[in-house]
Amino acid sequence: MPNQIIFTPEAPSPIGPYSQAVLAGSTLYVSGQIALDPETGELINENITEETHAVMKNMEAVLRAANFSFADVVKCTIFIRDMGQFGTINEAYGQYFKLNPPARETVEVSKLPKNVNVEISCIAVK
Image 1: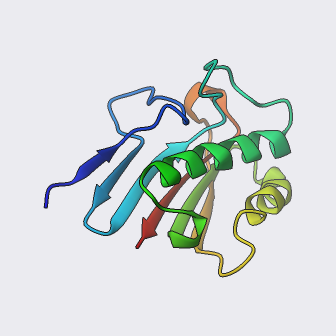
Image 2: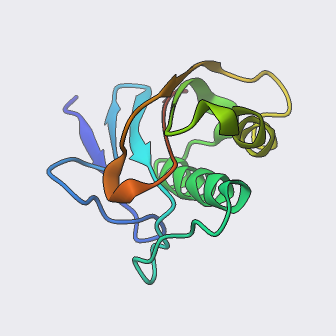
């Protein structure tokens, strides 16, 4: 069975040569999501809490497009520009994984696309 490219207008279109997600068998690989409003293309980054929620809503839209949910997520990677914001990001992120949170790493990086403060990717399995 060939890999299936997942696309939804409910999440931002890719800003480079990559897919929003790829379904390989029963595993979904979701590309890093940032806080772009899918309708306007504008960044949602008034504060880090709002930005993190926007990222998670974009991720949720991609998961939903492939008939997955946060309950199917087994691994996340969080890239942040300032580890000092870890607690605030973690609090917002945690609202999406109240039970059985996935494995995860959080990495501070010097720069992210469109100079956002947080980018999150995930892997989900059915």
